[in-house]
Length: 152
Image (cartoon, rainbow, N blue to C red; front, side, top):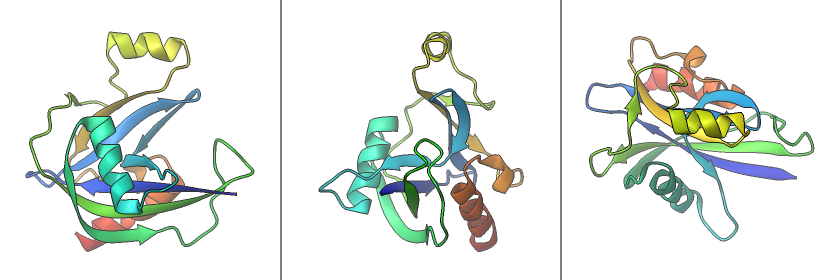
């Protein structure tokens, strides 16, 4: 069984990289924005939908960066293999979602949800000089972080 995930790498004008700090199923992760491909949609359509759902942000997909080329078992379901596809994206409008300065800087309402084991997320930009594979949590994201540090 496979799970297909689609992620976007977004830079701002200061050449900072957007990441999402998330609490999901009892664990904390820092990852790129995006999510799961739904039946009946293409990868680019999925990515645009995910950015709209998560950030109320229209994005343009500029180029493919990477597709998983190694076996990665799902952290949430050991019977599933993860295939992740990454694209470079550009914001088509100003970001209106609240941006955080520190990792996992969840507001009071989000803290209440976490106490009930409900998933939450917060977005922030990481300075290019500080951005590295260690800036993200997931194994495939770490590969992509190294690729974008080399490529961009």
